[in-house]
Length: 195
Image 1 (tube, rainbow, N blue to C red):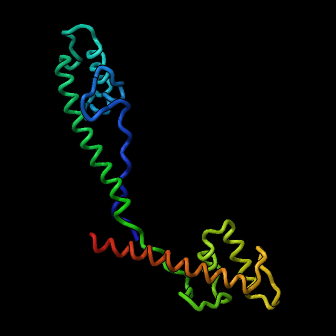
Image 2: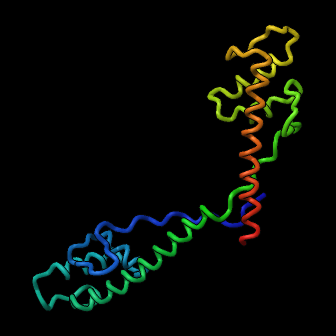
Image 3: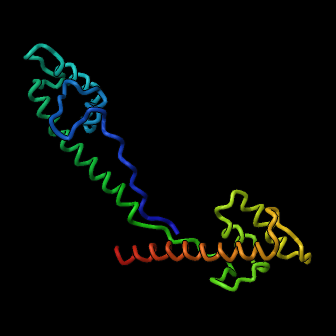
């Protein structure tokens, strides 16, 4: 099942010191200028020129593209508005994806009932699913399976549990598994009604 929509990426953090309004452009670094001039052909050269022009003590200083200090500030102010609009739109899309599409939960392991399981007949995958939060789930699952199938009434698992204790533990795991599964399925199905 291919996901058609690619998750929107989190937008890069804004350049340091870039305010939504009231920027003192002369104090901003090259990176901020380059970000604001992202669509310019020679953004690095232009950014350096703007920075130099704004820091110049010459009131008649002009940038490489012939703009005065006032014209540069006016241009950058418009760039700031456009930058923040783009940034906010991207952030909205990024944050919305968290609420959008919860995945469909994996199908339950074959043979796993909501209650009345015969644990000895379940496969390794079912045990591993039920023991998902255990540190060594594969080893523990194998041990539980072996212990439950053992003809020795006193058999113990690798973590020291008797057959009865294993069944009690797995019964609790089954309840927890189905609750998690149902919650995930509810979220998955709810999204269809939202969309």
